[in-house]
Length: 333
Figure (cartoon, rainbow, N blue to C red):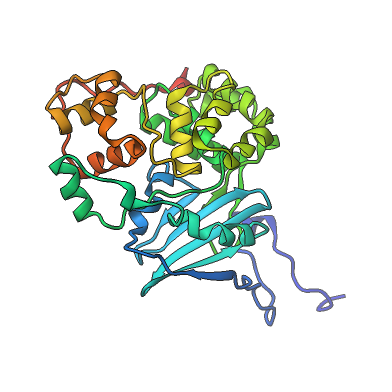
């Protein structure tokens, strides 16, 4: 029998990090992705447009590469998909893999802000005029996906961003699936609704997610199909549908439609820092609350979210005068 069969890798060789590959057997190559090129009708900065989709430096669904390309791993209506976006001269090239590839390429123009109209914004403060001049490539993205923005937004409720980013990273890597195609290492597609429902209670705890936020996510994924229908609604109606889910309030719904709809007027209320930043930038009032912020943004009705983005991009923020919000970790309890 000697020589009739190729040697099989043993448990020892696998544990040692090496699996023997028989000579003459080529490694399986990744199939080329489907491509599409979009030519924007104005300046476009990929970092500014797609940056809000990134949930922390270790987000397994998003990767910005040194060559300027951006990778996204998505759960689309057609299934898992990976998208690579690269600026090529005057155009933007998208390459996609997986069952959701065609859907991702079909949505590529809106992802790049084709449905956004920056000319509708008229700056009434010098700070905003200067910032818009310095950041001409700002467009508001529209993903066309609700759940992928809703779940991380729920995780960010009432905790530090570090805690929320850690929870998202751990849960997606453990219960998601590897991104299709030649995605950079450890990129994953978030779990589907059924997989979120199967996350055990102790895994929420280990990820630092308290019962209130975990229960809100579970209520949302039970009606995931109805929530995804909100993409076809105007932002105000979409927010109303999202807020039917107990635990989803104005802060969370605004954070979602800013990304899923590219809603230019969906200003975030209930935020710990934003009112003070807007108040300081526009009126020198670092103690502004939501009502003062909304009053200051009233001249930008219809474009209040864009105004807030420009304020944040301006870098004009009040000096910190109190300790940072303490970071907790219920997973250690």
